Length: 251
Ligand SMILES: NC(=O)c1ccc[n+]([C@@H]2O[C@H](COP(=O)([O-])OP(=O)(O)OC[C@H]3O[C@@H](n4cnc5c(N)ncnc54)[C@H](OP(=O)(O)O)[C@@H]3O)[C@@H](O)[C@H]2O)c1
Image 1 (cartoon, helix red, strand yellow):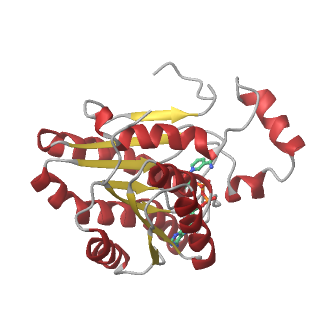
Image 2 (cartoon, protein in one colour):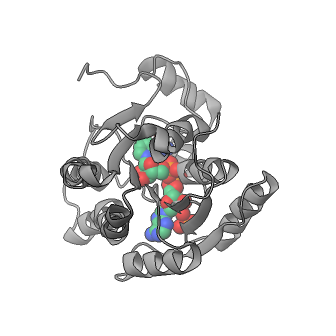
């Protein structure tokens, strides 16, 4: 299916592995010109090579640490110089930050910086040109809204949901959409650390996930690519789970 990606420019954070990697591979295979962002250069090189092998345009690689104070401006300037104005931003960089009740202010700030502040700053850097050009897609990979304890990332992801909803209303008339995708349990590096074996996965999945298994990154990337495409022009301000039915609430 041609989703109208050819020639579009896309910036993908967290592109070195897991969900961001699958999104980058999918965008590249659909003909988008992609800028890949993460810290681990060798993994980004592998993703870039896989995109070229699939027939996609050669990606631009941006080795960057999202904790750096100037990360958002630097990443945007680098991507802008290489690709021109950005049509699609996939905010997939981030990670879970379980913490104790006694966690320090620094621990809270670390989780919020990675999972909310930088994501917001990068988005605000790309949105003005999207509005001018009357096309833009912001897709935020967030997380579960059912906390099982304290986790700085949960608070950050909730902040993303609220900020994204407000932003979606501000920019909608200019052809820019802002949506969030909530992964349930999608196979990736961080999930592998928590559930090292297939038995660990199945023990959780059989209890909690109606589908009875963890998801593959590509199963989430399919939705992200649709939301990034011109086909999704009337989908805005949403939070959509990709979780095999794990979410227990009706609304
Ligand atoms: N997988 C799931 O089931 C699940 C569930 C809930 C939420 N999520 C969320 O979905 C997003 C992607 O998840 P994932 O499972 O693919 O995550 P992951 O396995 O932890 O991968 C995280 C990605 O973010 C990048 N990253 C992390 N810290 C960074 C930093 N300081 N600077 C630059 N890049 C950084 C990593 O690249 P480098 O290490 O190379 O820099 C990597 O590409 C995350 O926000 C995660 O919280 C995932």
